[in-house]
Length: 127
View 1 (tube, rainbow, N blue to C red):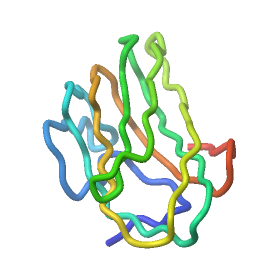
View 2: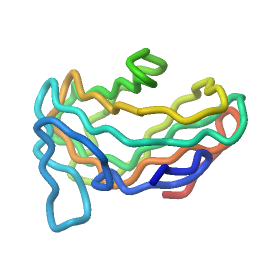
View 3: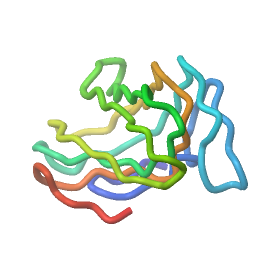
View 4: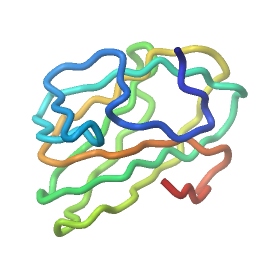
């Protein structure tokens, strides 16, 4: 089934992946450079959205690259979190429709628990 956008989803609820490890059924971990997870999403309405992810990173160079049906729509850096979970976010324009969302990790070394899309720019999402 598709993940509704706007909405919150668990990182480990992917439909396809490469190199991803699920830890305790609750998060994706041990992400290596080039790994990815894919999700089927249904965007209800075209517009500006805030993408957010809950991450834990012992490295200083992690990266997300969001792709919709193979087209890159967002790059997001993952900061060093000193062993704590931290929410990171960025704005992205999405058109209404059903897509294959690939969350690619060009630079790994961190963990992801949950991700979300909220309607509007700079919209705080509690995840």
